[in-house]
Length: 313
Image (tube, rainbow, N blue to C red; front, side, top):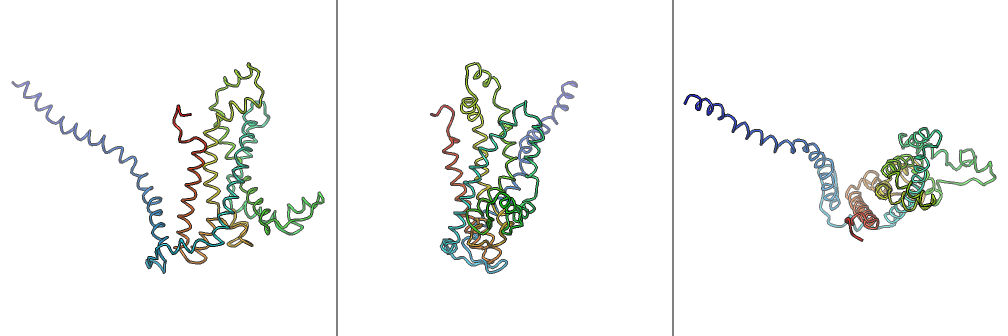
């Protein structure tokens, strides 16, 4: 009797302790994800909801706004909006056209073990990404100036080519913006493609060599399919980067460009929100840009087969 009484007294505290342990196990995951949830609510969900509400208002001052329905969206549709959309879309198209194939080819070259100084080249390509876009933009603005003494016009003059007013005409201004973007992000995309090449088994290339496949055939049949997830990712972030471009055009042209040749969608949001003090119109353009960006990326992902399941044709 004495033994049983002692065992009962020892076992009694186990139940509440086990309950506490189970409760801790259930609560622990929520504690770990709590910082992410708070960050998402404060810095992502709240700004989106606030921007959507502001797009239907006329902001008269701090804490003073009037609901005006779809007026901001109707007023948004004008020549400046379509110019900004056209410039942004062209910029996105050209940056994707340059920043996908060229980094992929460079990564294939730098992935070869017989390339001398390949680590130096990898670092050299990546260094521009660490440079401030403001500093880089100012350099490009001076280098592509319209005077005879600017860097690019001097080089053209050396070959007998007449000088060009790079930042005064639409096509040349777009060329400068794409060159600046290529200079900054080429090395980053090279790193993405290099990491993708590491996941392609070497045995596939060895088997193809035994079968007599040419380098071009290996590239089309092994490298490109193996890099498809990386290509999809690079295109996705390039679309986002293209449609959200602002700092490059601002440093090249300032708040306004001649004939809107450097006006992007985000530049238009900045003009409406801060120069015109019309936060309602800026919010309406921002929400429209978000919808356009999501639509373009969804179409791109559907075309590249991102939503297909394994086994689908």
